Length: 264
Image (cartoon, rainbow, N blue to C red):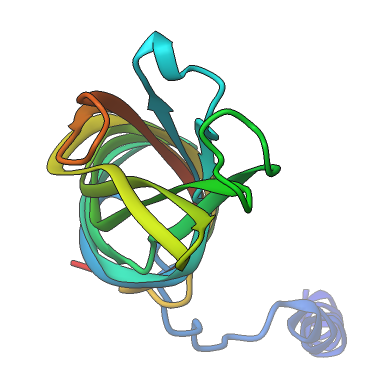
């Protein structure tokens, strides 16, 4: 009996330390670090923009049929220049899709005077002894442009591509005149045939696209293109030696701009 007890004790002394060495060591758990929050485009924002605009402005003069063909009727008054302003809006993000509404107001450096001339040789009916020329002059420009647009975008984390479109309106001013110069025995004489102008707020539409990137959770930057069309307007030209007539001023254009927003 004593012999069995001694053998068991010796076995335990030899085996137990080896088993204990195979057991996992007791260590302290690492501190819990919460995952970084996922960026969302949802929220209000306000910002500034600056860019470049170029317009497709056409001015057409109409006359009494008796004078049709005697003077240039189409005047190219295309213009270009810088633009800048403010924008504000709100986005709703649903999974990777972003729906939003945005309004903006920008100042436009637009408005260019164009002219076209038709020359008549000496002996032409009404041209006088030294010939004559008839010149049409016109200008179309907008002081400012505002838009109210919907936006739909697709977000890839901090990047978003989007399309946009909606209402556009702006203050458009246009003017036109028609004059004739001819040579007589006393020299060159100029006669104002008619003139007219119009200044009003026009409404139209706009369509565009852009890409936006969130620099931080509160600061985003964007690059955007917009096409706008403010339609056409007829107005009276009169006050000269010819019967009163009409002119039609059509204005549309393009804007490429960069913007910076603060997201609340």
